[in-house]
Image (cartoon, rainbow, N blue to C red; front, side, top):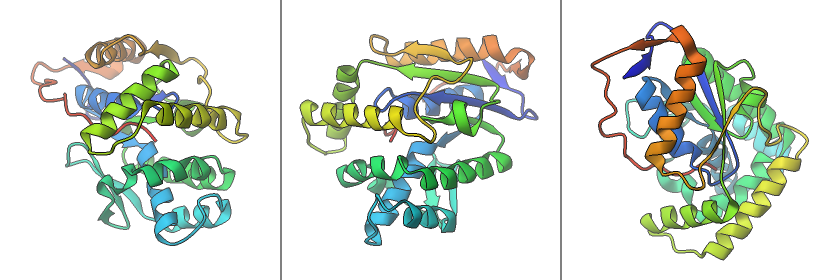
Length: 252
């Protein structure tokens, strides 16, 4: 199994629309490569959760951006999946509720919030420069010089079905039509915003996950990293991918 050399700074970005499985894929790929997983979708969700808890309108960009700048955002990578901590406290599954899902688009589409979040993500990367990071602007804005840039895509109907299944596992009941409407609207907002729009990063490899199961997606991404990374990868007979079938929450 190939893992990234322990002394190497190395960043893999995975971008794409909501529901393509970026978080699950990034988490499993990071384990396979011996890297840490930066869940940027969770970071935006944490900002939305904090705004809701403090009675701040999620669409109030300046106030939410102030929240983000005042937060200490970090991950506990000793846990699997990694645990997002806000000011030292775990947010857990509170960021995955439907209320937060409805609010996060307004939070993530605001320019001032995105600027604050980009700074937060780069701060984490400066301290932990061996990452697989996922989002909608990771390879295009946050880390344009990343070692490997990947763009995941899938048909909206497929993404909606997957999201409904994930929510049901967590005991959250919804309908495919409701989730599909949310996904289509999120795609529109993400692709048309002025700051950090959802685009294919320059030089990124595209992987359509519509008809590929999760194990094949991971294999394809590892092949891409092998091809792009060159000598940054070293062979490790001891590093195994056993147990990486853990399912985590999808992207924001």
